[in-house]
Image (cartoon, rainbow, N blue to C red; front, side, top):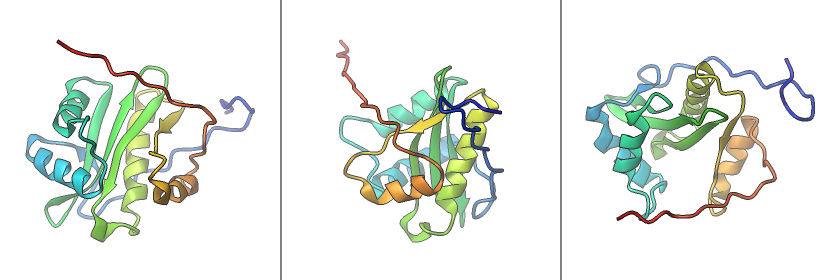
Amino acid sequence: MTGRPDGEPLAPVLAAAPAADGEFVEITDADVEQVVELWKTCELTRPWNDPYVDIADARAGDGSTVLVARADGRVAATAMAGHDGHRGWLYYVAVAPELQSTGLGRAAVVAAEAWLVARGARKIQLMVRTTNTDVLGFYGRMGYADQECTVLGRWIESD
C-alpha cells in the first residue's frame, strides 16, 4: 500500500512489545501524580503547560489518551497520543532515566502508534524542541524524519 506523497510504501507499525512489568495501558487516576513527576524528571514540562490539564484533556475524549507502563509497581514510561481526524500525534514520550536505553522508549512509541493506527491514523507526527537534540537520533532510528515544515502557534487568551 502506498500513501506517502513520494509514492513510497507506508511504514508498518510494529507490534507493541511488552514493557517492563507488562503492556502499555491507559492511565488511571492513581497514575497521575507519578506521570507528572516522570515528565518533570525528564524535563518535558514547561511553566506555560500545566501537565495536569494536559492529562485531563487527553482523557476527556475518545481521540486521545496517555499510555503508561510500570516497572516495580511504578510508572516507568509514558506516551500521550492524539488523533485529530487527519493525523496522529505523539506527546510526552518519557522513560524513567534509569530505564532509558533499555527499549522501553521504543515500546512506548510503538504502543502509541498502534493506538493511533487503530483509530485511523495514516501518518503520525511529533514535535521535538530544538534544544532536545539528544532525542533526534532515537526518533530517526524509529523512522521519523524532519517534515520540512515550520510549526506556528498562537496562545488564545481566556477570560
